[in-house]
Amino acid sequence: MSAPLLKDDVAASLLPRDAPSELIPVRVSGDGNCLFHAVKVALAATGKCLEVPTVLHGRAVWVDIPCVTLRKDSLQAHETGVCHKEAVTDETRLCTGQNTKDELTSITRRSMIGRFKCLYWLCKEEIAHTTKFTSLLDLGKSLGAAYLSAIEIGDNAKYTSRRFIQEALQDMALTIKRPIYAQVTASPYFALIVDESTDVSVTKELIVYAKYLNSRCLPATSFLGIISLNNGQANTIYTALRRNFEEGENFNFQVSHHCVAHRLALAVGQAANSIPFLNEFKSVVAQLFRFYDQSAVRMAGLKEIENILGDDNIKLTEAKDVRWLSYDAAVRALRRTYSSVIRSLETEAHDRKDAQALGLLTFCRKFEFVASLLLLSDIPPLANLSRAFQRKSLPFSDTRILVDGTKAAITALMQRKGTYLSQLDIKIKQLEDVGVQQPSERQKINFATKIEDPYLQSVVNNLDDRFPNTTLIAAFEIFSGTSLLQECKSPGYGEEEVELLARQFNPAVVNADDLLSEWRIWKASVQTDGTDLDEKNARQVAQMFAKSEALKVLYPDLYSLACVALVLPMSTVDCERGFSAVGRIKTKLRNRLSEYSPNHLMFISVEGTSFKEFGFADWARSKNRRLN
Image (cartoon, rainbow, N blue to C red; front, side):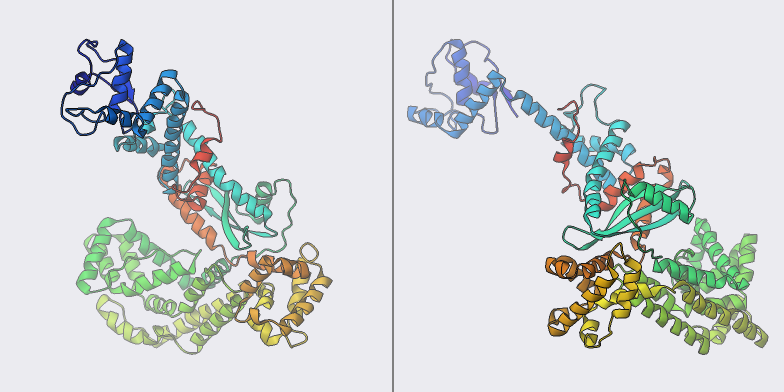
């Protein structure tokens, strides 16, 4: 920026003796201040001509300090130099008042964009934006970003009010939201992935994601919004989806698919409902977690006992019905710290006279409790199945294969006890020191007939009930390149699956007669030349269809099916991750966020780019403010 050149020793030495006692203030612009031009202008104001004096030693002629002797050719060379010309130009602009308004607008715009960046960073990092925005600006100013203050005009235009923050938040979220909605609308087909939950303010919410084909014909999943619900009934959810996303278009739901991971959790969680003892077991495991989680003193005592006994220093885990993995983790943690937990409960019950600890201790010492703990430790196939179902790119045919494999593994446990339960007698003997008594033969028989076998059989039955309609999803496996190359010579290969898909998607997506005809023609072409399909799975072949304009023209119905296959979601994993983000944003201290703020914050947190890549300059022009 410019700064006035006031009288000093160097400037005074360059003035004639009869010059005014005070040098007229002159602005010197840029880093290369031109002292020669400044003095020349000052002298012109006095009507004097510049004489070449012989004064003070120096190095840079007329820039830093003048030399003892000054040569006229050096002055002439300097006067034609860049530094001198820039000073003359800047001086002319300042004298005429040119570009002053533009410079002021530029600095205020920079200040506004700096504020946008601060607010965006807070939202992206999921930090309380309304309460921390002003303090972050103050930090920036203290670190040298003085331009942040340039936009502040008095006390009524500081751009830190709640209203400004909410307007900026909404506009930034819309900047992210519009391209997403445009891509979803442009996609030939899309899927809505929904899940409902209750947030920290005890409000039932529906979180919605969309899976669609982006501009590069690649499947993409994006956050669409959070909808408040009165209840979690199916009709309420269906009505809310149409009200919020139809936007005047009567889109047609073609197929609904229940999340495979949710179905698994329900199948396993409900398997114990008909077994009274396992219901008590689940309740006690949950009580144990809360018993230690809600008391730092108890937790410290448990850790001390773990160190003394040499047990693994593992914290007990909370078990929830919504995910079987939580039960698997809770059972594994309790099994590995069982002795320490019993000793800790003894201390709490006898030394501190804690009635709850005494009740938990009595139940946990039962033979049936230890046996159930080992039984549940023997069914890792359920945990492995849950992990497989939570993959983003689960192959269509794998659902049925994985479920059948898990059922076979559990059925085998009914014939032959698993690794942990087969060592039950040894484990009971080891636990005699902590008060677990040896069971009678009748107790063992009762456990096997009333708990173990009924539970395993109930899991198998529930898996059958929860996964009856995987045939439609598996039918998309006809696109598998490997299977097609192996079976294309078979006359009827794939036709049963094609007819099933045609019945489901006719007439909104495909024409049933044309689809079967296209399938036969394409299968014949693959038989002739299908080397490009070798070792490609169904999704990869469907991707090839979606990207190829030639295949779209030749096989329009197969192209439509391929697009449907690419956007068909297998689970609500993205929704679960979305709920995790909501939990980080809407905490107990921020439970009064309005209905719209969590939506805006979610778009920025989940879908927004980094603050270095966000188009703040474009956004700053989206609304006229005082700086404009």
